[in-house]
View: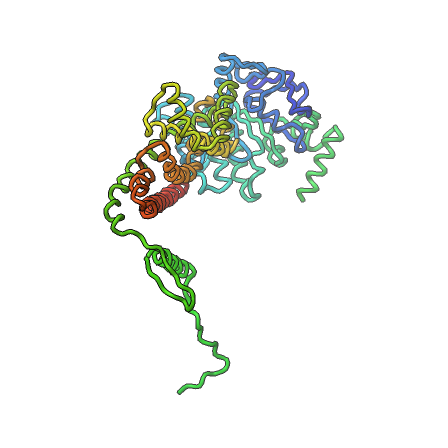
Length: 254
Length: 271
């Protein structure tokens, strides 16, 4: 059996009175690609953001690559463990969030130098390899404002990979892109999956999910309604809510 | 002779100049009017006799150097005060954003108190009020303290707005990469916030140059103080004030120009 990279147990999260996640249990194995789908407001992004504590969970426990953090603690040790956990988790945002005052290269070497205490030459060496991998070596010294959305997102992926994470979280990585630019980002993600990266992807790209995912999870109202291999979950869904979502989605897409 | 065909457009009677040129020309016209107002000339428009203001040129020639020497103190005071005010503003902005209750509320009270009382009163409090308790500060130190505290409070809100204008996504991206809150603030948020607030600091500096005039009330010999010293006893206060006013105006124009240049070069840094 492959080792578990992400384990979530009994995760609760509310915003005020609105319950977003209610007692989720969830595990991701090494090299696994899991796509999370569902309507907006179903709690997909919140689940993802709870994994690296960008959202503080109300209750529950999260384990990433051997580091376990319970919800709601604020001690010094907890703060240190949180940094260790975040070092192991790469995250890609819908809105890229590149640092606008730094060049592409500086975006990539910032965290390796500051957080991992890598030497500058080593960080640059690694950044150049990653830029080549996402096909943007020629953009090394430009500022993010000159990049297209697709290029910016590829840089954001490279920036997350520069930390050599154990798992990559993608929060609707193509939702802010023009349709003709989503392809280049999905290609990079597909390559990453092929290389064996453990990935958790919140997405509306059902084609990508069908092709790349090992497992698809359908969320509604803060809990898992259905999960399974894509050919089951996306082709012959059992739950009426999944069926409804897929029908509406497909009718919108055409 | 060529007969004008009816289809030909009428030659323009008004001069076709770009609007900017018109602006410059009219500025010169009004400036000339301003100079004429102080020319001492007398003339008549039919039954209306106009007497323009007559300046005592002899007084101005004799005293302009004495008054102008105040520019140095005015500049010293405003440069030192804007530097101190920026530090105070930065620290209190951080306090206002922090989740440390004692710090946050302290800064809140400071800002409220300073903004809720007149700057003029603050000058008196520090210079003459404290003297009652044998805390004797020189008029320069008092003026610098009053200006720093006062502008620090106003600029604190500017700094805070600048820090908060940096998008949340920036903090999230830095945190997700494992940076500590301090690293995130220092390396990611502040550099961006500083770019946002630089034009505002410039505006505050230009405003402060003129508020230094209040220090004349606590016996500081800056521009306005010297103008009063020279002009009042000789019944030439108007002339003395004209000299001081000219200096303030000149300083403002010069610094506005440099501020424009600075903003321009910073905007290019984004590309």
